[in-house]
Length: 414
Image 1 (cartoon, helix red, strand yellow):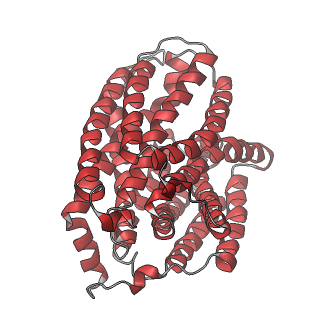
Image 2 (cartoon, rainbow, N blue to C red):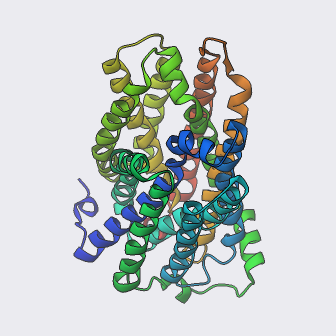
Image 3 (cartoon, rainbow, N blue to C red):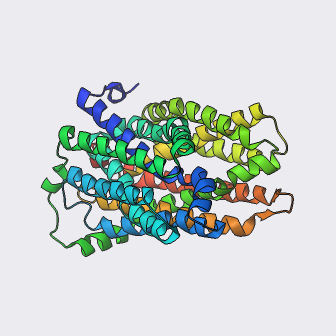
């Protein structure tokens, strides 16, 4: 094994990874908590299902727009200060959600939360790329992605429990309280992250910085790959619950156990995939994930009535495939931007994920047909579309690796 992969994290690096993962946990939980709270929020705020859909989508689209707008400024400040600015805005937005008295106020609150929260994920990735060598980034990305699992295992059950006790407002207050503590830790213990400000660069304004980043040929290919991966993945997500209940014939009571088992599994899967991508190779790990994802998605979308155990196993293996694509692709593409462009690159990439996900959900809605008995027709077509996008991204990632990463000594030192 390459000695680079045997390098251990310092105490401060371990702290940074844990902090970034916990920060991501608060952002992901704020986004995910909306769906299960819908049953309580709609009658309380007198919302129709279509209005609740607007509330949910308001976050995604405002997050996508804000990432693009913020990209011009992302590399012009200490990343710690930049992160704090948007995290404070996210906390304020979440607090507004907690006190929302009606539908229109809630839409405005979700827009505010998305404007600030949508940028944070890109700042987290930029910080990870700034502070960790490329040979360690797979592991770092793997640990950060455990925030998704933690939100399923700890966040959602806790949020639903306190909402049953004190109403739908309570989970938002919980997120605010936890986020304030995380913000305090960032202020006190996170060191300034400003090495990118000391690099030699052309002095141009924020708009020019955004335009030059978007028009960079090398970056454009990565942006296209990111958008394509998001389109395929987000097509299945909105219909997962319906498919499980109406096609696989499980009950709503089975869903928490499925989420719990999948979440526990992904806590271990993320770090393992990260280590594998650093040791075995990021492109090879991505290809493994792509093949596994394609096989499992085709199997999953064509399943009929199934046992609970079967569904839990299939979901877990699918997440192995998802993480085996997500983590190495993030690590590999983090090698492309120069330090002076890294914040803008990550912000635009994150925006494309949000916007592409929203577009994918809309497209999927036109493909899938719900019969009167609840059965979802054409769900298998979504699986075939995902296989197509996955196949294309394999060639795109290989092109990125071979042309820009593998043979570039400067990149490998990042």
